[in-house]
Image 1 (spheres, rainbow, N blue to C red):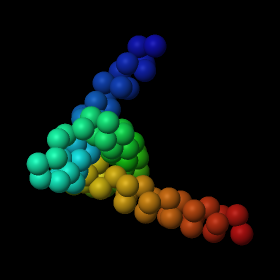
Image 2: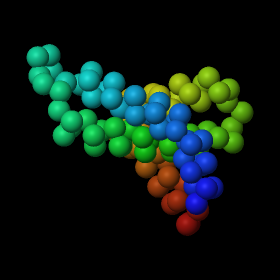
Image 3: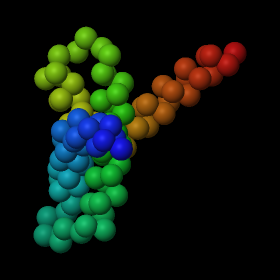
Image 4: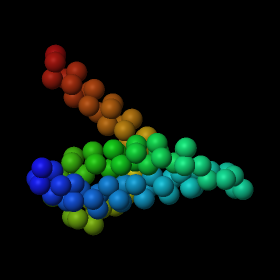
Length: 100
């Protein structure tokens, strides 16, 4: 159980950065004068965290600098739905290539 807590503690900066990207996107996407709604924000932030974690794990073993990885995680939180769509297409392409 302690191992899980340590792993979550290690991922906390990634989760926070991606969530901030998702929060920023939600705030930027709302109309002026429109009230802020947690009903809309919470799912967007969860999707942003998922996207940020995927980018974190995909770039973990690369030779990218920490600064560039941090920017990639934050941007993946901001544009989470687009990032997930691109990763989906890439994954399906690789899978089709492996099956044939």
